[in-house]
Length: 142
Image (cartoon, rainbow, N blue to C red; front, side, top):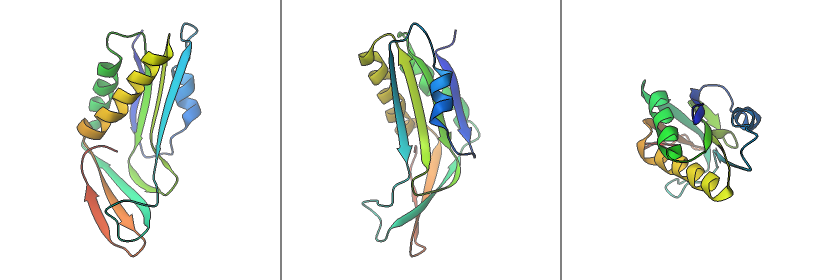
């Protein structure tokens, strides 16, 4: 069975329960999750952030699968990960990761590896929208 049960980009709202069900496994005693949400502040913003607009390279979903597979390689971890694209308002989930494994340390390590690599390697860009209409492009990742 593949270590990656889900790796997708979605224009629809992300659902944590879908990710939890995707990694369900009777041999896994540990389950970790990460939910990255749009917040209303940013150190570079001069006004309140009201939205993020995500766009992705056509190969981004394939890259997301590779990121998850690489993070789980050599472990018994099972991964489900999704990243939103399109316009997200404050409070909406931009990234959800669920990792199940036999032991907690491995589940935490794989989950952290997935999000850290998304930030550096996933070809997804975001445009930050502030309350006064100012916008700014941010680099790779979520």
